[in-house]
Length: 289
Image 1 (cartoon, rainbow, N blue to C red):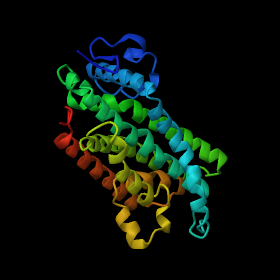
Image 2: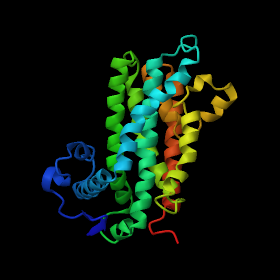
Image 3: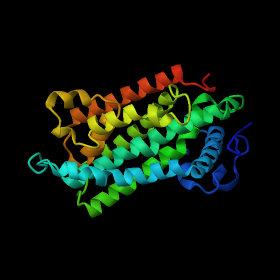
């Protein structure tokens, strides 16, 4: 079975050549070792085709790669206005948290909103549904390159901030890892949900803005939640990406107790369940008329 968009063929059967169907993309292949062989082959074929299409869209590539690296630099002057030391905060830790948060928003969420809409309008998703892949496999295979890019970017930024901005060694690195493993799939699920309410590829940049702005301002990405009024911060703690961002930061600061960390993880999981349910209910597989 095959689907085609922008001249790239997506073949989901017999995709074993070249790093099991990914043409040497070992990073993507390694992320799929826990699934069964037939599903793994289909996911790799879909991810390989999506990676090819992703590389052809220069604007998306630049946004996904450069924005998470450059935006933290632009928000640093705003952070310098606050008495971070008085609040027990470190600029390196805050910049690291901001960088990874921007990876959630731009490398994964914003990029995938446009991707899902584009594949839908080009009838790629509709053709894929006539073959072997399940709906989950189609959505996951489409999101896999962006999620892997976001993960690689987050790890690189963590090392860079630790070395260059003296963020220090993480107190609880497992919390940061959990935050990444929760934040990246949730960002992809939110992108799929947003695409359901997006009519065209051009309007994808508009429909993604509400979550982008709300998350940047309220989830502790552009501004630390500590500088927000207490009641506002309490409400913003329940925004979709707030739990994942909080876990990422807590991995470095060690500020969460076991009870608080458990509550934050459960909140992130609850958002993921809600997002997945909403995608199953409202995701559109055919062009909007």
